[in-house]
Amino acid sequence: MQQFTRFFTDEQRVRIHEASLEILENVGLLVRNKKAREIFAKHGCEVDNQTTLVKIPRKIVEECRKSFVPTYTFTAQDPQYDVTLPGDRPVVVTGSSAPNIIDPITGEERRATSADIANIAYLINELPGFDVFSISTLAEDAPKGQFSLSRFYPALKNCKKPVRSNTPSIADLEQVLELGYLIAGSKEAYMERPFINHHYCPVVSPLTMDVESTEAVIYLTEMGLPVYGTIVPNAGMTSPMTMMGTLVLGNAEFLALATLIQLIRPGAPMIYAVLSTVADMRTGNYAPGAVETGILQMAHTEMARFYNVPSGGYIGLTNSHVNDAQSGYETGINTTAALCAGADLFNMGGLLGSLMAFDFAKAVIDNEIALMLKRIKRGMEFSEENMALDLIKQVGPGGSYMDLEHTMANMRTTAVLPKVANRDPRGRWEDMGRPDAHARALKEAKKILTKENPARFPAELDEKIRAHFPGIVAGDARWYE
Image (cartoon, rainbow, N blue to C red; front, side, top):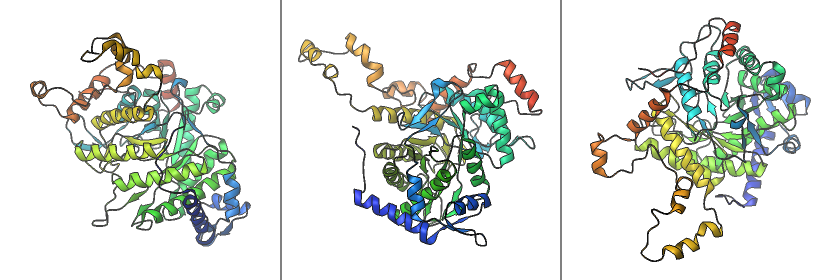
């Protein structure tokens, strides 16, 4: 049985749950989406359509809790890449929807394009530490009327792992689903294996449900398609400037969204996903890389286990604008803390500058961190065979294990063998031009992206898609030189 780090006693977790129910029943939340208000009203919630305030009685939340399910599956185009929480934890996902990219040739930050998304998709497909590609950037070159299509098409064309992102409107969402039907061969085939995974932030802290994202969550839940939401309180700005106050408010917001989803379709899979942070009140700056983000993730994860639902979120982000020590310790410390607390999902890969810019080298470095997290999760594998007593007796005092078959047989499974982390003596490192981690990671990205992509669509399918969506972006992965 695996043990996790815990902050609270059983009684304290119950009190946090009770406090969250008090908020939903007595304070309520603003629900800007009319259809959501109608769903809450139909099931007995107190709804004021003038103010849009909705109060949710605790008995309704508790009734919905009975239909929570403990697993969530990300489906891929290629079934070998399907992953299910929590069994396949830690499931590692790229960060998403940054407007900018660090150009790998000039090193300058610029607006991202659909060609960048194609390259990122191919890179993530080839990096074994990543399990899900959440579309990392926007596409500045999107033709009019094809904003989301210009993101999903290059992503799905170049990555066979599960692809995840959001859309700004129902019209965009329907267009993306149409793309999915074409790839699957029919709507019926797609509905059997819905390989586009949807994610939104319908709750705007404090205690407000928006219009468009809530509409998308309702639409997808009614269709029986995969969707979940992330809760994002920011202490000092949109939640109290205490860790417990932010936890309780965020927990109430999760319960409100979970209740809406379960009222629509009891048993719909969900993830208790968060990006709870504490603002730097010296400047008001957003601080997703702060250690408090990791602590809050640990606490939310503990509450997720209380509700028996998978947990995780945007954890391992950095405020740093370059691949320096800060980006390394912010990603490393927070993801390790979340892993030890039992988090299942890690939206951690590839972004710098508080989710503002994707960087190829950062993605390769995060792949290495992800492999280390998965190794930590494996932990110590206790067995008589692994204690190797016979071998210890055979080699004896003063012997060597270096040239033994046992060593050769176990060297690739016992230890992570990194490509970015440098372990050479100083002299050899200097002879190589003193490359730092950023340079080594960028070299690895280039090595992958200058090879032919095996994950592309077949030509016949691509022609069919391009004929169906005239003017669609090229969506081809190609290195920048």
